[in-house]
Each structure stands twice: as C-alpha cells, then as structure tokens.
Image 1 (cartoon, helix red, strand yellow):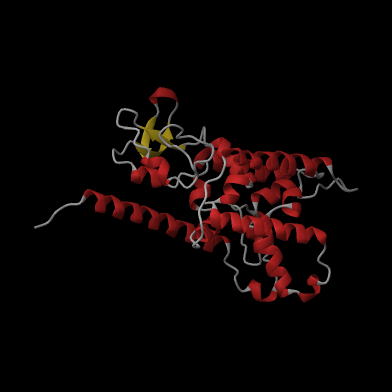
Image 2 (spheres, rainbow, N blue to C red):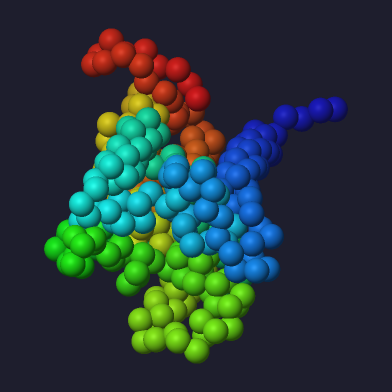
Length: 300
C-alpha cells in the first residue's frame, strides 16, 4: 500500500531545488573561469571578453578568468581622466541589480560558490551578529567610491583601493596562483601582501564557521545588489493570509533573514530555500512586470 509522506516529499523538493541552484552556480563558475590552462604558466587572459564585467565577484587577475571584476573596473578609472569604463561598469552593475537584486549572489557569483563549499567543511557553526553586516557598506563607500577619487597619481589615475588593500577573493584567485607560477615574484612580496594574506585567512576561517561570511561582512558588490533588492524586478512575495508565522523559513535561511517579515531584506540572496521550506507555500520568488498595484506577477 502506497503512503504519501508529506515530510519526505518536502525533503525531496528541497534537495531538488538546491541541486538546480548548484548546477547554475557551477555553470556560472565554469563560464567565468574557462582558461584553466593559464594556472600552469601564470598568464592572464587579456582577450576581448575582458572588456566585459562579470555580474558576480571574480578577480580580474585570476589566470582562469574570462571576464573583468565589476568592482575592480569601477575603481580602476573612477579617479582617472577617462570615465568611460567606470560609467559602463557602474551602469552594468545597476542594471543587473535592478533586474535581479542579490539573486546574483545566490546563483551566479563565483566567490559565492567558493564560500558555500567552505561552509560544508565540518566545524562548529555560528551565526553572525547583525551589526557586522554594515561593514560592507563602509568598505564600499570608503574603498570603492572615495579613495580611488581622493588619492590619485600624477596622471590623475586612482588606485583600485579595495582590490589593492583588502579583497580576499583577489588574493585567493589571483595573488596566490601568480606567486605559485612566478618564483621571482615571491622575492619581492612586501608587507601589504602579508596583510592581505592575513585578511584572506580570516575570511576563509569565517566562511567555514559562518555561512557566506564574506557576503555578509565584506563584499561591496553585495552591498550594491542588497540596496537594489528593495526595487529589483525579481523579488520575493509573501502571502500574509497563508503565512502562519511558524518560523521555518528563517531557520533555513543562510543569510539569517526572516523572509516572512522582511522579504526584500538587503541580505536576502534569493536562494529559494525558504520558499521550499514553507509548509503553506506563502513565500514565492517572482518577476514583476508593470507598476504599482496593477503589476502582474509571473512565477520564476
């Protein structure tokens, strides 16, 4: 006799949803880093695809990288005599953010996938104090917007401050592989790289203990997309009539958000775990078209 077990069905749905997301993440990671052979010789791809930005965070200096990092592109010329690239990078990030918000973080950010894999390492797991999530906005304002404009060289070129002084993704994906491939670079490594290596170690440990530690605390790209979560076309909708306030959505959220109370939270990466976990199907991720009360909604 066949017995339909609701809990088993719900579990299978959650696994299926997560498998689909992982497939998309792996595909995005692979497309972003197609030149794996460059790791052997320490060369960088500098072809025409490097003129375009990756929607997620992936270091320009990674030997395998196909695309540019949008944060690096925004900084590199924000204080220079030519603003074309900066305008393009800024416009690209804003357009992607208005369309998808932080769904980019949840589905196609290469460094997001790395963090999730690190979190799977067996270790005590902790939740982050919410106050630390505001650090990424300070880093964005100070290192991405202000320093590249304030501190420039004789030619008016601003330094990519976040990439140069902080970015652990750049150290992991670009700095370490280049040092491994070029022994001569190891002899000139200075104090700055040592500081960045320490930041990387702290970040990696943080990612093992706290889910998406870098996303929550340090990522300036996540800060931009998070702000745009409030207006993004791809958004979360709550059926308040169906919601029973059971709290199950909050318990599965990797970003420590309460989706039923703050569906447009700046921390939500639209991973969809809460929508599958909800026993009343009160949560849904949707694309919106139209404006105001008359807009029509289509389920993603």
